[in-house]
Amino acid sequence: MTKIIGLTGGIGSGKTTIANYIKSKGIPVYIADDEARKLLYDEVIKEKIKNAFGETIFDNSILSKEKLAKIVFTDPDKLNTLNSIVHPAVIAHFKNWLECNKQEPIVFKEAAILFESGSDKDCDAVITVTAPVELRIERVINREKISRTEVLNRINNQWTDEMRLSKSKYHIDNIDLTSSFRQVDEILKKIVNH
Image 1 (cartoon, rainbow, N blue to C red):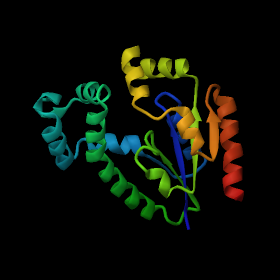
Image 2 (image 1 turned 45 degrees about the horizontal axis):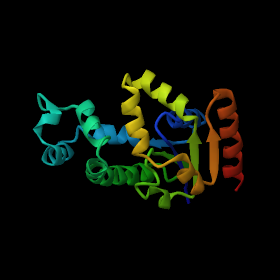
Image 3 (image 1 turned 135 degrees about the vertical axis):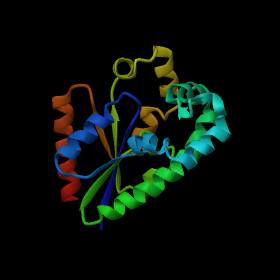
Image 4 (image 1 turned 60 degrees about the vertical axis):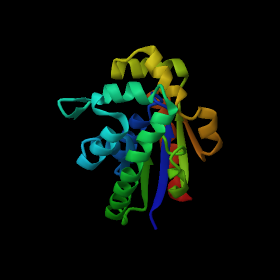
């Protein structure tokens, strides 16, 4: 039976960097946010988004992720609406991916909203990645070229680190990569030997 390990953390915590390090060890990692972004190009999902949010979030029939983000990260109800459209498709995609990796002893599922979506229930254990809020803000501003206010809106629409940690078996404090990778190695040893 394949063990599913959840990997989560707030925006800018560095969970994708940790996920890529785990991948480099030859362990399959499903990155839910990447798959969700790809699903935004699916015609059925685009149609549902258009019905929920209107034509104005499309530029020449191409979904503007920036316009969509400005709407959903300032209105929790709109964010829930978007998640209710995209999340079932991500769950179905993950099931197919898991089937393709069923011969693996361990797989990871990286997801920003692992707990919020209820996906943690499918995991044998969860790792939460944290970093100080100011460092997270700086990382996101540099990566996405958005304002501090926009980053804070996204942070405020996610669970707090304390909420995630209370439901997680493992914790990675991701400030310095050398230390973070050492923490990952220690956790992987525990998971493999458990």
